[in-house]
Image 1 (tube, rainbow, N blue to C red):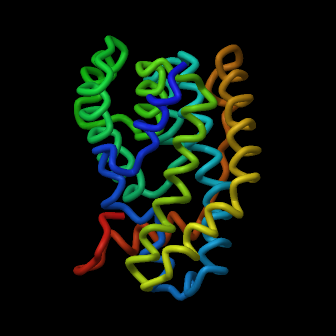
Image 2: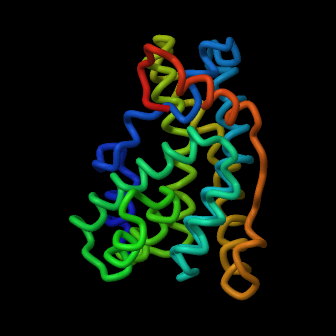
Length: 224
């Protein structure tokens, strides 16, 4: 496996569209749930152990070769908010374009044909990792890194938070990211033999309701 490929896939400058999304942080800031570095850390920790664990396990399972169509259906079932489902598919479509240009692979081509409007982003991410010669743990780490670094970067812009403080939040979460990533791989391996129903289905109601409210705003800085 190539460490350089992992750095490319995890780089925030990889043209996968994530920079336009706040991961729920914009709605959380307006609601007063995120006001400083401490509340940002709480928000990111909540994402990590709920939606983060779900998306990381989907990405790991895809990297392990679980059927992407079944995983896409599992992602739909685990995403109650129509706004979040739409955002996940838009991000999946953008990531698909970038991944096919960077690491051409027949499995990416097949998923693009199957889901022309976009598959869920973590499913595409897992296949992109597979195409790049990476493993399920790499896919899980990429998913989790994006899940916490996206909101942290967004809050720097939304609140004028010191970037050093935002980076400190990510560093303090590192050990928890390690544990969630390994759990995601374990769940992905179980899905290989037991099916996608065994994957985590953790709920984050405030993220879901916040996403629906955010989608109706007339003016917003981020797409989601």
